[in-house]
Image 1 (cartoon, one colour):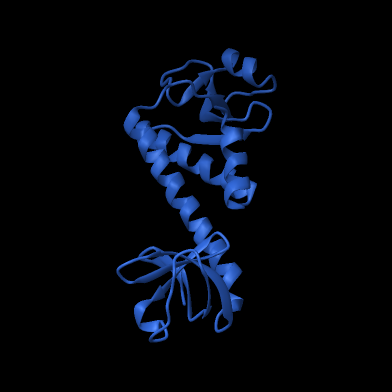
Image 2: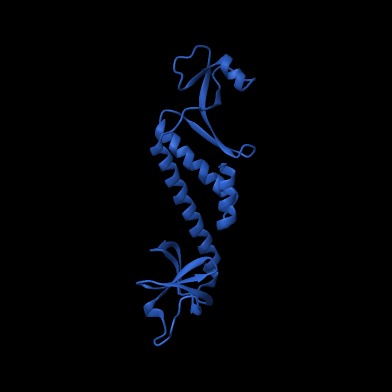
Length: 193
């Protein structure tokens, strides 16, 4: 599967900004490579044509290479960048692989950043609707109250906020006051009714 397909899926499914997702994926891959190869200076670039992320390392152009991790010969440098000069730094494609643990680290960084982006989007959508009446659908009953769907967003209607003797059925609509809008989810919910 192409990385651009994954990015497009996230944009369509969750309504997130494409540029932010590209930035988050690049940051996750950068984190994985710097963890595996701490001595290198990396640059991660999203290639729109191929739909993949290209990883580069910064090397100094020299006549005689003493440290292949940090230096590149002038002849090799000119195959990458024809106008390369001695004592300048150029970006060289990095071909070394990363391990399973680094891939898991990248996935964790990406998942955390995307969750933060989603929470910010929910907060921005609902912060102006605080203290207004919301129409939603009861999704399921939980220990703390009822999980209620407002469009695609799930909010919590705690038991203590339900009108006594009111019958709440799963799948039925409910009208409730949007009492709290949290910037970061508390438990599983950002919205409290």
